[in-house]
Image (cartoon, rainbow, N blue to C red; front, side, top):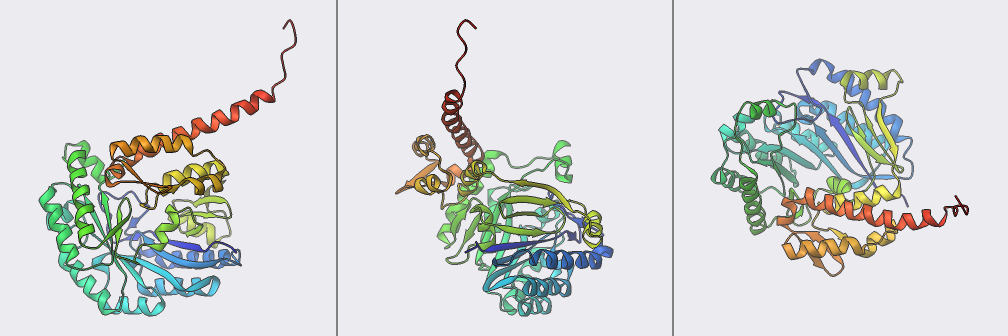
Length: 402
């Protein structure tokens, strides 16, 4: 039986561009929304015919700002997906929204169309911090959006937060978390601010603007993990926390290496053993799809050895972690060198073991890039040691006297 599929639909339109954002998103391009809708509908129809035998159990509208695209367009996309794919009755269907671009009527219509999960971009409860990011909303709009979502009968609400913001200190971060907990969401995504090259925030930092340093961000993170646990939110990934039964099923597909299809400029897919992405260009995507041209940017078959590396890299982002026999069975690779390294991490308080399963601790998550990088190096060395003897065995002996 084929694995269940996830579908991601990228909506690249925004009312305004936030200073930290490096996602493919565009402000001031409302004139292209209808043509983009036509391209997405066409692309979804074409692809649906290729997935017979696969059931879709998660759909995620991300951006950009999907709510800014308008509920009529989103409903048409949902209708198309429902008709062209085998959509599970209990499918998780998420729509990302900004608090300034939703109201009760819109959310009611989305709920009626089949959406059952809303992800709100909150980021902060502090007006100065929101202003520093050029976010287009305030916290009063957040509270109104949450009330509208509840009024529309959404029982699965996720809120996004960012820590390490310009001018933010521990007290400010704690205040944001407490105000958000009072809204009682089912899920929280809490990300450390990352300054991406080429963004307006990057330019501000180059010109001397100060941000909380690594130690301050680490303190914010560790406090947050403990506070959310006290409030009943179980951490299941580096930046994600949920009440029981409310983990993001769609995002877990990425971290667990499950298949998914993406639609839209810059969207990625992993399907049929092949990973591919589409051009990060709205016009090229529209013209390519509607004109029958190619919109593929990159495409590659993923060998099993690389899947083994991804298993380490992605699963160790989650609290589920990795397991010896799972690794051996799936990738036919030796786990012992990896386990030796994990035992070193355990002594440092960075990893923990439950029976045969290993996961990183909250302190380990803080340095996960370094730790996972070291484990990938250990894996590569073990693979080379296994390969070199075979190469030597197949090499002809040199002739005498040569």
